[in-house]
Length: 100
Image 1 (cartoon, helix red, strand yellow):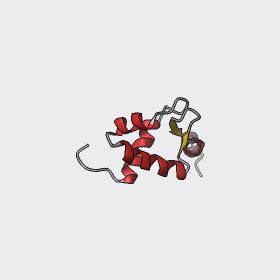
Image 2 (image 1 turned 45 degrees about the vertical axis):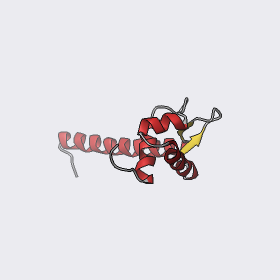
Image 3 (image 1 turned 135 degrees about the vertical axis):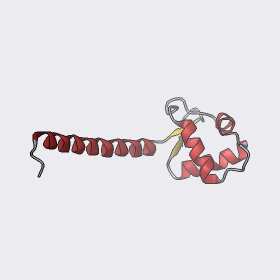
């Protein structure tokens, strides 16, 4: 990794690694290996993410992205869909020659 990661960078890396692991989660050791950082630093970053509601600890003790992250992703997807719908509507109006 070369340079030391700050807490924010570490937290973002953890969130990226947890993508697609919502059902199984990852252990602190697996996360620290994946982000190439110490277990202590990884634990601190995980604690921060849990406190802020972005990560949850599963019954197995593993960590996964939280429901709050799913809500953020869903809201983003809905916003993008709305924008795509509006663009499609404008394209139809332009093609029909009825743009007002």
